[in-house]
Image (spheres, rainbow, N blue to C red):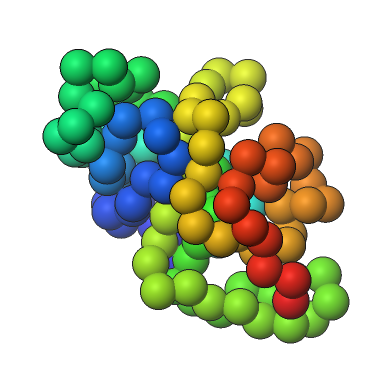
Length: 128
C-alpha cells in the first residue's frame, strides 16, 4: 500500500536510488496504490557510482510502476504475496521502462499485464 509521501526503492539500473510518491494515478480522490499501479514520483537520491552516467537527475518528476509492496496483494488466483520492501521501476512518458535491467524477483502478475517488458527484463518471477 503506497500513498503520497511514501519513500520507495528503485530496482532498475536507471541511476536513481530512492524516490518519493507524489500522486496516485487512476481514479478521483484515490488514496492508496498497490502492485501493478502507476504512480507519479520525484527522484530523491541517486546511486553514487552511477551519478555521472545517470539517466535521471535528482528532483525529476517521473512515472513509476510499483513492482513490490509490503502489503499482501491478491493475484488473479486468490493467493497473497508480500515483500519486505516497497519498490518501483521508473517509466518514461510512453510507459516504457527507463532502465534495461530489473534486479530482484517480481510477482507473476506482470506476466499478464501491459507491462510485459518489465517482466521480461527482470531476474526472475515468483509464481504464486
